[in-house]
Image 1 (tube, rainbow, N blue to C red):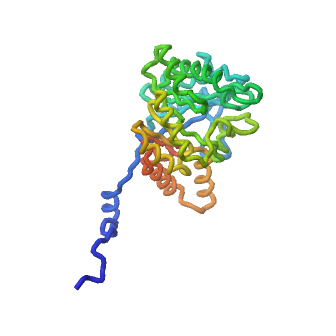
Image 2: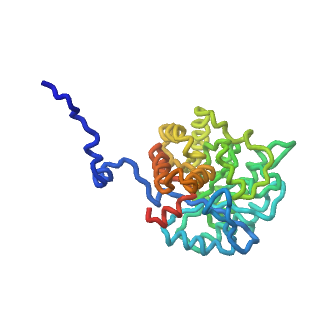
Image 3: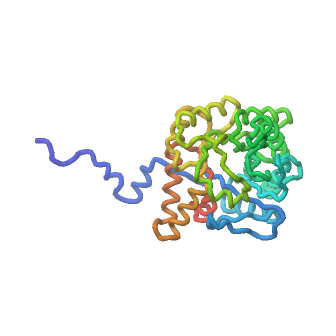
Length: 324
């Protein structure tokens, strides 16, 4: 007579911590995490970012010491964002060999040569209007911006950046940057494409962090958050243009997109847990509504489980200090 009780019992493999650990399917380590950092010129001390508790603008004069501190904790890679005091209509400081973009890469690589330095390649923090490129009749001029992105990428590579990470969301930016890098002798410098970047409400705290002067929005060049098929198309276009790795930004609300792109491409895939995602976890924990450490690990695990190889997260240093 058949038993009234189940023969298949998944709970057998959950009985204790050792079994749960042994059969865990998804893992992440410090090797998988990139720490985004904000570096401000012409200031003397750290500036707290109120909308991102625990994150600060780093004075340029203290950047070397911070890079050394990250390395001691086990951080392997950083993404540099500059807070510039030299703004103009085109963001021309970004392709100056002694501008902030170049100085950040040079300081970081001199401090810890083995640190992988990714240079965010855009103009929103360096223009007086806050848009990601050159404005022409109140619209961003895609093709003129491509020329300037190439110049910025070459300057960053010349200063030592290991990876160029274009986030301007211009059509053809990967191809333009690849050609500029190759022509300047930097054929070994990799491109981490912000290949699927949504016009998300989750970037809010970044404006404070980066000192953005933007009035309006970037919906004409960043992607509609409701478009799934277009998201895959955007990343595959960047792959065809020569990207070495792809990215989905934001991460947590776009796990379906991460999975779609993972299934469509064999390139390394990253995802960016953005400022709003970070802030929601931090403020939720401060209110006593959630356990911060557990939610951080669960959220990053979900991003890995969806298919990301790398995760950009402001929690990277917290996890490093906790021994992950």
